[in-house]
Length: 191
Image 1 (spheres, helix red, strand yellow):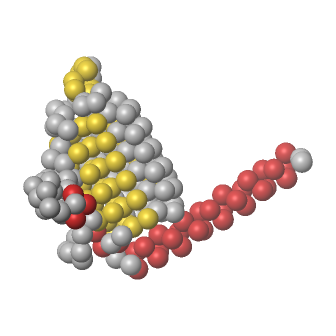
Image 2 (cartoon, helix red, strand yellow):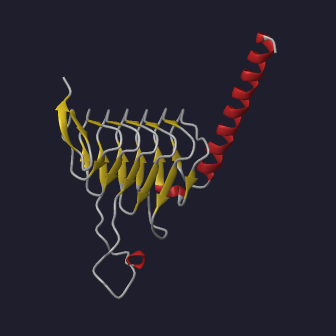
């Protein structure tokens, strides 16, 4: 295969992918999702489109799951501000609210879960006890989460903070600190 032919095929594939993303974005807008200028959607899963608000110039990779875990309610509850990167396979499992500030970098496989199942009743399986604790998750601007980070209910991550790959964040992280581990703990501070 000649180099010219390979470049032409690559260019055609890129144009087709961009056209598909534009159509997909228009479809999600029609279904109620708020999508800012310059943000195009790959293949994503969404339970309630009106619960999702994406800012301008965001970059999303395929396989992201925006799950509002409840019946129809006013939204949005999943708010992603401007210029945010969301890696492949991220999951938003939300009953209350998850909000990501401007310029966040969220690596592949990260999970945001703002609720628990109930455990108070022994006579009822835990999967049927929906009255567990709930609390919003908030990320400030310019936060970087490494691959496969799990952020649990009630956590606030301050602006400029970094969370290492594979960490499970159960407590709030102050601005410009570096955290990692299970459960996550302070490892250092950004200079």
